[in-house]
Length: 176
Image 1 (spheres, one colour):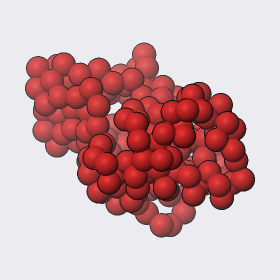
Image 2: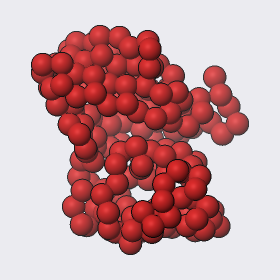
Image 3: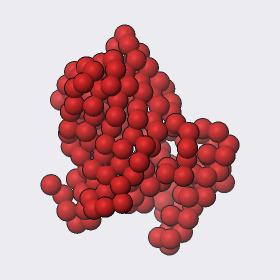
């Protein structure tokens, strides 16, 4: 992530935390990260992993897209790039992402907020995806929807995989 994007993420993260009246220590402990790491992120420094950003979004009670919406570059690590395409304003909240995974990539994703559903449509390549222990092999044109409020994974083999991902968040107080 470039310096401008880190600064934007840090400012946005801090404003969301302060709007909830939380201290650095409270959010860091809830997200399972070091207070010093959270402090660096809010100052526009560090190199947050996708999992760290997801954990912070879950603890702040906001969709991942809300936390990263001000960032215009793809977020990525370890062979996976994710870019927010659009974020719905209706209820339930729906976020749309472009995602690209390098060959021989295995990404374990942490659970999203309770009741979240994820739908993936493969544009090119192939991959195994879904809840841990119940993944499905998808190829170009295939779509899969699954409960994303439990651990899930993405695994590519010999080729790149490009996909569209939508996440539908359960309305507050509602879980399917």
